[in-house]
Amino acid sequence: MHPTRQRTDANRSEQRLFTAFEGMSGRDDWVVITGLAVGQHVAGLSGEIDVIVVAPERGILLIEAKTAEHVEYRDGEWFLAKNPAPTKNPFAQLDGARRSIRHFLKQRELLRGDEPIARLVWFTNLGRWQFDNGTPHDFTFFEWELGWSDELSDPGALVEKVLAEHCAWFGESENIDVEPASLTAAHATAVADALLSSFTATASASDRRRARLIDERVLLEDQELVLELLETNRHLYFDGPAGCGKSWLVAVAARRAARAGRRTLLTCWNLLMAQSLRDLVGESTFDIEVADLNAVMLRVCELEANPDGATDHWYRHELPELTLAALREHPERGGFDTICVDEFQDVAGVPLIMDVLRALCLGGDPERSSFVLAGDAGQQIMRATGERAEPLPAARELGAGIVHVRVRRNCRVAPRLLRAVRGQLGRQNDHSGDRMSSSTPGALEVVNVSEGRELPALLTAIKALRDEHDPEEIVVLSPFGEQSSLVGRFLAREPANKEERLLRDLLTGERAITWRSIFKHKGLDTAAVILTDVSPAAAAWADEHDLSWNDLLYVGMTRAQYRCTVLRSEGAPWRGERDAAIAAVVPPRAGVRTVGAGSSSAAAAAMARMARPTRGE
Image (tube, rainbow, N blue to C red):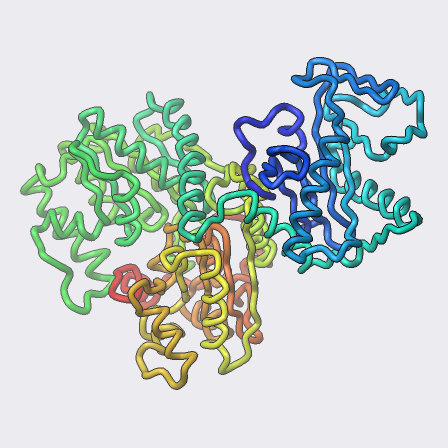
């Protein structure tokens, strides 16, 4: 649908048609254009078409939407009560628009002349049972060119019916060629593109990006109502699957606390996620610290950096112990009134990290501070399966009487993409609904790649996404880190041919496309994602390290907001052996996986390394 969001100035009939077509399913190759201004009108200075439906293999339908308390047609004259122009002939409006479109498309050599272009006047508030046709064979229009409120429940069926009736009648007429098959899918797309690009401002990838950011911000800001409803509660835990705006809620809660004069910490485990939180909070003159937990602990200990080659033992044991000792001696290095933690599942149940969070409270006493936490038990890819913990009980250990807030409405991922990801991975729907329009463009493409063709497939995928997105909106992700990933191994050698030199330039040039591991990108959003190294070897690596391969793929794929391309090697599973064993015992859910081998310190060390970004990640 174009546009993907309803116009604010649309009248009631146009709103009803938009809602009806937005909910239409099973016709993914159709194009529906609403509120199209006709600047190149052949019968007047300008005009507007309420809805245009371009249906491949069927035809083009122009729709005029009407809401009227009473409709009367007598002696060739129309009267629509309570309309701005009650005596205006709606079919005359459509005829003028049809001539304009035919003229415009013929000028651009996009019409052969036999494509059906039908018309429909749709009374969205009147039922067919209210229609009393005294002249069923009127000379000026057909009864099948009238639509009623009864048909809003299945707009696709009405469109198909009108186009079929149009083709049946005019197919028998002399000197008129009607051939719906001439409107192929490619031809229909070209027609729709011409209408959109000519009757609206031509948008670049940057323009589309700005428009998307505005839409996304509106959806997220609506979520702030949740905080207003809960502002009298000291401790909050936001629990929800990917795409529900949890990070936004935590960031806004931190900003509000700081604005109220409370010393505030906004933190998480992932360094890149901390930068994203800084961007959400923006510049502030209030007493608020936004940093990853590792940076917080280094500051408290007055250390410049982590030791070279630091292992998981340093991050989860040695540094936290040093931090606790420093806070006992210098409590002013903590002393936060409010502590906000995003991606809480990454640290939930890690004893020393939990102790650090308590020690950072005002006076080192959790009873004197407030906690705002956000997490998703189903995204614990930073831990081996046997080391996972339920975030909610851990949250309750921090703040007595913490309020569990379930956030379930998707407001970040295009619904079509989210449905495709869940279907591909065989995961249940944990979302209660979508705040984004269901017609928002979004797609999942799984490309089967034969051995040795991974780099050409990556280049092709990048080129395809560059048509719609700026380089800054694309990220290449891998289950592996810098040295083992497809991109890492490729950039470690010299390019072998022209295509490889082009790929290297795309990945390292002035506006380079970002590439990193799934672990480092966890919690972040990107318009388009390309997932590489989806191979039997990677699935086996996940099983060997006691990781959920299915969860890893889910986190990687749901980093995309609109487009996700998966480069899948032959034989690569969607579930690892460990996932399959778990699914056989526990029905799939967005929760904690507890079946499997015990803890894996090697896996934990690998996750810790992958969470610390370096160039190219």
